[in-house]
Amino acid sequence: MDIYQKEILLVEDNPNDAKLVIMALKQDKVANNIIHVKDGEEALDFIFSKGSFSDRSTDNFPCLILLDLKMPKVDGIEVLQKIKADNLTKNIPVVIFTSSREDPDIKKCYELGVNSYIVKPMEFDQFAKVVKEVGFYWVLINQLPNP
Image (tube, rainbow, N blue to C red; front, side, top):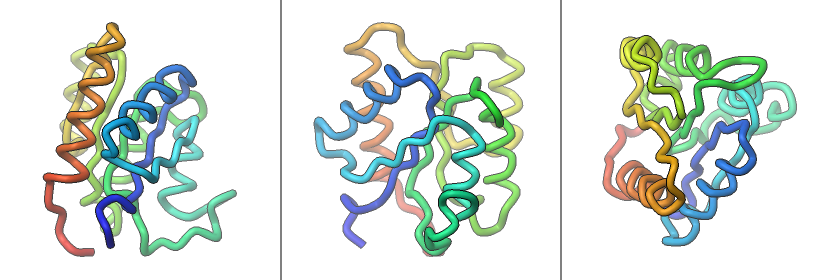
């Protein structure tokens, strides 16, 4: 599969942050196929092909999940826990991209197997730069095992 066809799953309830992430990833052509879901429940449905995503193939997992923590319905920690507990999805890189600097959140995410924890920069230029660097590393440089 061409690396530019790999999916990135963006789990973000803030529409402004989601728009900035998508714009940053597409601007330097880090990713063409970005799936945006607005809460943890929708993320789990997408990943595990349930609900409105039940027709989606379970053979095609995203190459990266950018996951916010503080979301409605199902929070990011629960989403992370379910991804890392399942043998089919545990190797998907998950990067927490959140405004939470709370040490208990950071510790819990690493205990559950998060690949990286990034606090969203407040300044637009820095925000875009961080997103591009994260996308570039996880999509173009990092090597994942074959499923």
